[in-house]
Length: 320
Image (cartoon, rainbow, N blue to C red; front, side):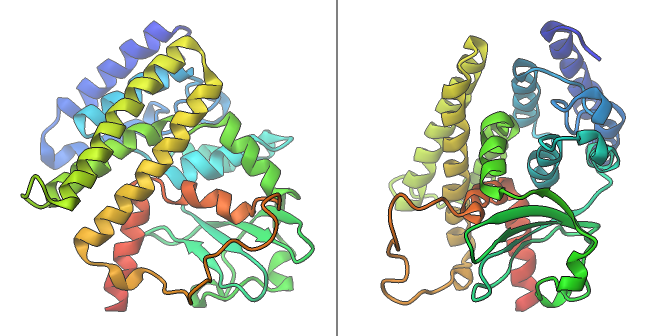
């Protein structure tokens, strides 16, 4: 793998030219996906022993910005930016070697399931294809939470939570989901998410109204200006090694994603998918110093890119 930032940048330039710009429309998407796997670029920041290229942040920024500039498809963020990094954070990542290699090769389909207290509905982030593995995040009644891996259970298709028998074969990654997700947020910042927003905003622009003074267009212009600023800031902060400030950039990137997705739902008319709550339901409950719900922390990650919109649209079509 590349030993210097300059060699990584040169490799990225050549890769984009060879496997995207140099191919015709009919063949380049399938070729691109195969090339990502062959050259370990689905997860270029992962250690090489787990299917990555061990690229530093500077090289990652260069590669993902090139992908955004030329409209290259970007990998599924659920597996590459959530599941994979969580596996790398465990005490013995080598225990998950097979999972990490499958993620790097694009061969694993993961579903994320969040379970609150028994009175709350199960929340799912489903892939388009059949689920191979489930990442389960649970909040217990006593305030504890945990993250574990298990096979899809028989009742999953019917939105039923796992039974005690289903959980017997699970592999626990952490007994403190909140702490693990905080570490994920701090140590595995999703740099790709900053540039993935650009593709989403391009989609919004093609669907936007023609009235330059319309409220919808103004909101989109605000997001586009903020997006440009975030990309510039990310470049500068990584060049300067200001990792703490870089964390703020990725937080704002998630805000851009959520606002963009909200605007897209409005453009496409999916108002019926917004859950209605009784008056006062969304008022804060309890002390402001209460621990952060681990599920709440996962929501911005679950809303990365148009991957979530794909699920939203698919579910809407199935329900119509």
